[in-house]
Length: 337
Image (cartoon, rainbow, N blue to C red):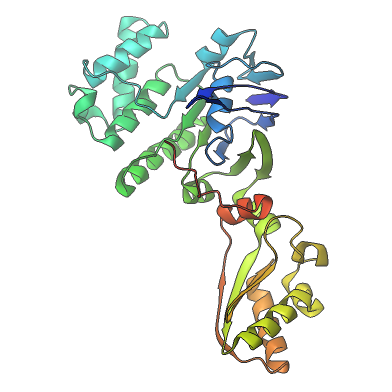
């Protein structure tokens, strides 16, 4: 559905600076739900604007929905939908009229545009709002209207740029319910950006992470977490001296790495943060399988005279993946301005 290769030196003016997409190689199959993640300035929105023909690449090629974005931008636009970060509907026309007008802009006959508007009102549960103006709608209602406007011409591929930003938890859940329904009922390919990592983790079957204009990770959420972050074991001890001993044993004990299913190289933390951290009487370890590694670790500590006060395990997050790859948190500066 999407094939983009070698998009380099693409610039966007933003706050008197430029943002570059240095090199993107990306293939997306029909029917996938792909979450495109990265901090502010990473190139997410720039990439979407290129793929939707709103911004021409200075070099490289991209084929979207079977059409080249540079040679046939009109063909691309006819086959995709795009929901940007800002609201799409105007303020002076009623909701249904906005949908009909959008359909007419895509070449639908008046009667067909009306039928399509009614279909979308029902699909996105906007029927009770049909005669209201967009300015009177709540944030979640307006976002559903934005999605409806992107679907008027029945595209097989829908781009969503931060579809749930700024919404309260209930509205976010409602918007996501409709997004997932589109995929389930129509097989729509969905390519979206979001700074809510739990959304990408639980909803997307594929996660692509971009940083400094380049893709640094691509896979399923579970795969990336298992391969690049690992589970966490956190223990506390009575004294800092015992914590230092526990950290040494956790970082160098071959039996622990074997039980965790992690190689020596992976346990050493080749990129980003180390596999073992100590802070006062608290020790944190990164392992492949905490449920398997923790009992062995506790036996090792007990055998070396270290008394453990508390012990807990935690599954990694996508932010842990980004932290491992870059040494910084994805959530430090990812809220759109």
